[in-house]
Length: 390
Ligand SMILES: *Cc1c(COP(=O)(O)O)cnc(C)c1O
Image (cartoon, rainbow, N blue to C red; front, side, top):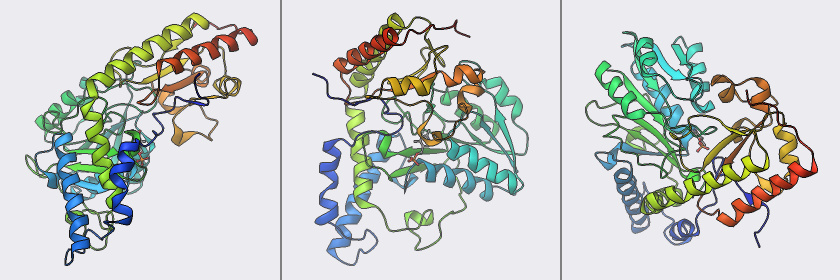
């Protein structure tokens, strides 16, 4: 028997892996010291855990040195620090930023704020498959451009941008490159040096770690990136981000990444197999379903599916023991169709007919079969006519 409700919303957040919780626990009750209070053993123990986590995390993302990691409260904060921090630090050099219409709100709204502050921002429109054209990006660059921010995996449609090629182009043009890698971390390899990334945002709660723990990668050489600080105070994190360190969260973040990397190939195969089966099963139950975004260049576990002629909200109500999402978690509550789906050229109607399935570590093949069966049952119960995909 499959336990319900079934959680297929792993792009919104994930269950914390019990092994991660286990690693975090001692840092609440036993080693509770302030990592900045290194005059005594309590603080030194906490500091040691933080530095161990920093080294492990740096290695896991291909940073050159642990000091390139700034611990934050999550990807929203990392995006803000990277984009505002670079914009203000390089204002003398230029006032132009480039991003894309399908970015997370943490990037888009930060850019909007900078527009009010006098910066100019180009929002690239992706191709219908969700990918950014390299020529378009190059054409958008001017001698005033200081930063390009393009995400790795998209949180709604799962497509993986070719950030290696984007990073190389930015390097050639002498423009800084930031990538929000919250959705790709631990799922596909990420190597900051090989990908020519200067700044990258991460969060623990998308990789089976705790909420409110994350990191920003800040390149220290070729070039060394300057950031204007966004949080003033005690000068923690090399002065980049003040505030008493969340020691259990930091330990959780590093442990979560290590666990993902141990199983990365195996887990990728498993998730891809489950997604293939889910898509095939749903298509058999409800012909006419189509996959949004590029068919193969995507983060494992994500399926954004359009059910033409059906309303996503009613579908979710009809299948109330399957937790999926109509858009991204961050924008629900708004009745407007997803701006991500609109940006890849979908109509309001097609966008409103889309469900996002996010499979993860704790999902099983039996759950996939159960969800297929629930959809098939729904299709029989409510005689649906799928309109032609469009
Ligand atoms: C979840 C997510 C964020 C926000 O991360 P938080 O840690 O929740 O602040 C930012 N960007 C992307 C792509 C995400 O998926």
